[in-house]
Image (spheres, rainbow, N blue to C red):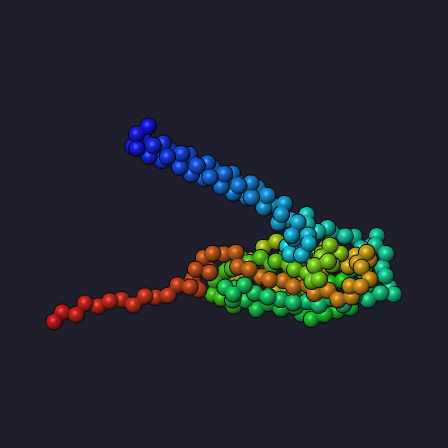
Length: 204
């Protein structure tokens, strides 16, 4: 076999290997994307992120059928965070309360749109410690749906919940936090627009 033929054959082998590798990468990426949904649900269930009664990752509880543990207290702390692009006021109206597992409670958060345009935002919940996430059941929550607020609008947003009596005895304090995130890309873009200087041509 001549030298040119050897080079041509070597090049063909390299092309086949490259094609095979690229094909495996595409298949791997497709498989990873397909697995993202169940993996996301698994992480949510483990950490409490994104858990809500309407999403299927939590459950709505009728507290009237749940036995209330009157001899036990659990402290619930409330926290509020904002995405860096969201110009809202957002805070819990109470910082913490003591509750009996099995009994239904209601608290409220307050939010206000401080911009001059309408914003659609979504509250993403999180619970710590993450082991308690499956025992915190929301029966009504502003996080179940997106929240639309006009310019300057503010409102109270109720939260109703019950702690499952099956919560492990060693967990005595839970922290429920919400992060509001702007889902309106236009409002994010508006806050980042900067007027560029106009160059002026001077004639000598």
